[in-house]
Amino acid sequence: MLTVTQALEQIRESVIPFEVSEHPLESALGLTLGEDVHSTVDSPPFDKSLMDGYAVRISDVESGSATLRVIELVTAGQVPQHTVNWGEATQIMTGAPLPAGADIVIKVEETQRQGDHVTIAANPPTANTNVIRRGTSIRTGSRVLTAGITLNAHGMGTLAELGQSMVRVRRRPRAAVLSTGDELVPVTATPERGQIRNSNGVMLTAQLEAAGAIAVNLGIARDNREDLAAKIAEGLKYDLLILSGGVSAGLLDLVPSTLAEAGVRQIFHKVEMKPGKPIWFGQRALSTTPTCNVFGLPGNPVGSLVCFELFVRTTIKRLMGAEPSNPQPLFARLEHDYSTRADRPTYHPARLTWAAEGLSVTLVPWHGSSDLCGTVSANGMVALPGEPRQFRAGDQVESFAW
Image (cartoon, rainbow, N blue to C red; front, side, top):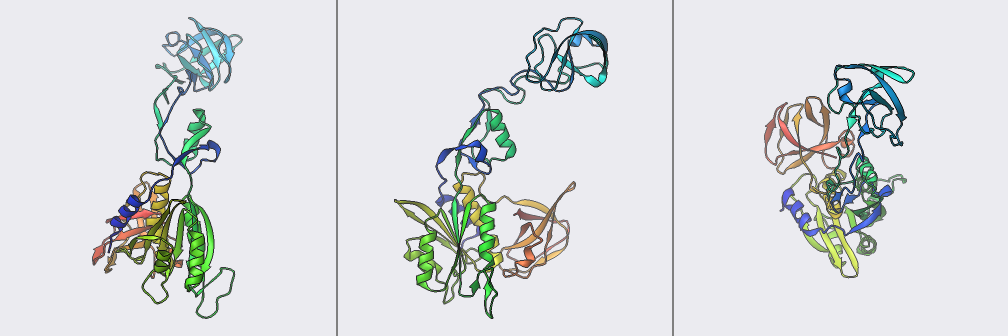
């Protein structure tokens, strides 16, 4: 049986990132850059004032005091028309270009204006006081953003500053969710004896969208080959097909064999972990259609949740070219004692808290893979070893944020 690390490596080796294509910047939030971005401009593009005040020569105000003649007013968007010479000042607004001859700005709160003269009473200034020089933030030709990063709001703002109205990115994957089982009924139905609502369909669709995919819920496939095969055929039209249930070793666990009949090649089945041991992963690759990456997740909801966060999210990142694509552990201080007696590595739902003293974590009360309600207060999980161990409050434990 594969370890979690081995399963993640098989996903990385099997999943090929999408091709890079151009995309409008305005709708690129959450997409992954397909190539490095280098600046074609300096930023700022000119020496400019960081304050409302007066642009002066530092030699005129070395002591912090002086009375100077004001020669013009320059606001943001205007270009200075005069050079600041000895004994002169230009009134200037935040963001306006620094006039020739001036090398610092005295903020307006440290001045008094009388007619066309200004009296300065400030601390002795230093070079570039209240001024940002051309190219301080970005130099022409420098790398600004790196391939593999996911675009956020300030990354998009930076690209807009550079005039990048189109960006080269990898698209979002299209994903289908299919729940399996005769016991399932829609969320809107009242379950009869022996039935449960299809919570996995809603949960997995939400997880896909939160991870950056475009998701569609295909509903429920019943425990017969005809219905399951028909719905799998529909799901294989997508980049990702996520099934829940039917992947273990029971009489009606028909998913692996039905996927094989549909031409899906198994890459691995079962991983040494808890919850989520029965997880199945494979691919159907045809010359006429894009590759479909297929996951069979456990029917128990927390098993599906955990397997998604470890394996499906990794696949989405890999398809979109995000680096790193594998789950990134966080080491947190355990807030309480805890004993584990599991025979497999366990991913226990937990509450991560960020504070001034660092990251801490509390394991939430949880009753196993069917206890989805127990995860409501969780925002991550703790990886516990597959052997008896006594943890003490204050120990550092490997954690993952959701």
